[in-house]
Image 1: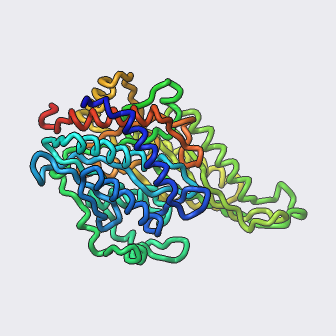
Image 2: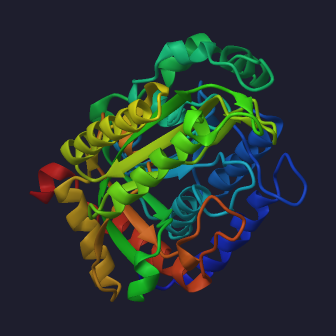
Image 3: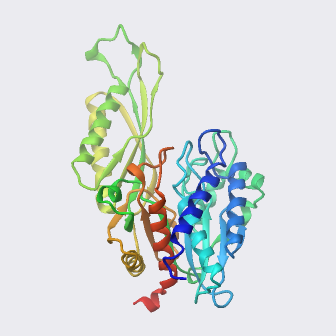
Length: 418
């Protein structure tokens, strides 16, 4: 059986499993599968069943990752790690995360059906919490595997007042054992994550797959402007210290600045005005700011410029301002030697090799602390993600499977790749 031969069957298998997993949700009619919930556990059990069907041993580790292992020509060899995450945002699409996990399982299954063992093991990991929805801390599963999990996160509280420590125990896990999920650097030869693009580039260029060059760093900030609340009918416009109009000026400044710098993106995703009455001038407004680009120096410079612009707008309007950094991730470059093997697999399957950065964060960012990583992007319709309209066509799913399977079968560890 050739590398390309199972592609059509693999594509149908992957899509069927994507649909089956999408049916596991906390909310009827939408997809919501949040870390350490009953539906999260049901999804883990389903993934483990598919892993075993594909010839792997499978288990849940101490943070809730689902880990499948396909031994090599000898037991206990270092592994090529593959995977993505199986948690979702609320009211999510079905492809973000699960496509990478399920495609990896399907590719291992193709090897197993042929009785093919490789000179290295394969581990497929469904990471438990990449999105950070429940406890506002992202990449929890992959950080545990990389040995960089911050134990202070165990005291984080969800919107129902439950700590992560309590949620882990309710899930049947021991919070004190999280360190056991860590992999030694030498045990992982490399990490490859297949993922929908979550953007419009591949679709615009008519390409089913892409080779990721880097994962852009991100800085998230919380901004609070405080002015003076007052009666909407009695305070003259010239005497107002309106926090909401001040926020509007700042938000437009963020948009204008980022549009003027190629490759830089800025987003205000949340805003809240107090006291929130129709006949009261807003006295206090909070909003978020998310700044991303592939270069850390450029991102930090942008954050500095925008912080200065917000502070200047606040001074002009007589507002107090508080700006807090709530999240910061560095830019992580894909390893050149492994990226080259991804590109070779793309070319061997007859597709144009298109390199592009990822503006979204991925588990690969955390795994990069213990192993070189690369990523394969699969085209998604309209570039839509984190939304029910998120979609990948069957032909593109097949293309991703073909590329990943070829990469696995031709993979050469770094010492041999040089």
